[in-house]
Image 1 (cartoon, rainbow, N blue to C red):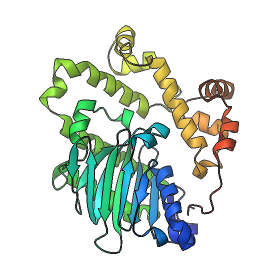
Image 2: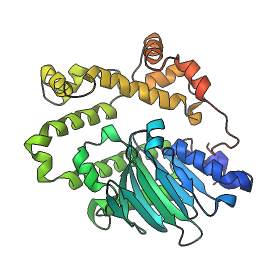
Image 3: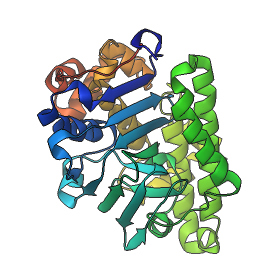
Image 4: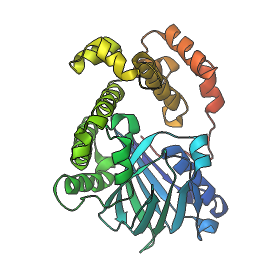
Length: 338
């Protein structure tokens, strides 16, 4: 599909626009921007022919990556340097894969789903059985997925039920989205994004529906994660506040503050941190360069530009506009979008 007809929520990159000697570096930068920084090695680094398609549907983001045989690692050093705090639910669409995380080891093949966490080290290998391997990745904010850490450690890099039921539907929708995204209208994309979110939520809920989730030790932690998930899903709502959060979960404001009393920050601080984090990510995103600083603030619940400027400066040491200017670097290549 031509650039003129590609919708604005779909972005594509192809390393072949760069000279062969620069293609591998281009790919590593694209992966760092779209997923998280990785240490990547490949026997094809001298002429690395790869492509990436990114679909942003507000509630969810999906990336399809085509690449030759490679090895990719999230090391502790890279995690300390940059962590988007994402759960990645990946469909192995082509090629032989291998992933290792949290003492788990799994070899996904075509049609398998695998979960991994950007906040913990992992190693992934991919062998292109044809010219390229392909992985389709659904990006889920960690705070928006109410999965206790103990359960998450059991699920990452393991075989998930992808051949039947909700898992099969989820895999089919991910694969179909990659093929049809350039032809979607914005309204359709929003509906597909909602469907993906609902399916992914149902899929993960089934995976964690076990006795330990309801035990006395995890009940409080699960409720706190559920509340954080609610906050992350509604963080763009200017009316989101501690009383609104408490009312939505049918608990008292005092109970809400008690739950967060065992956390690193208060509920109000958590809301503000989530808003500021989303704003910072948008300000550093070249795809959103045409949006004003105030539009980005409003998108994530800051209706007062002065309050947004003060909060951002207090958190990051720079005004939003100055941060964007510092972070924005025009690459030698640009995404294809409408």
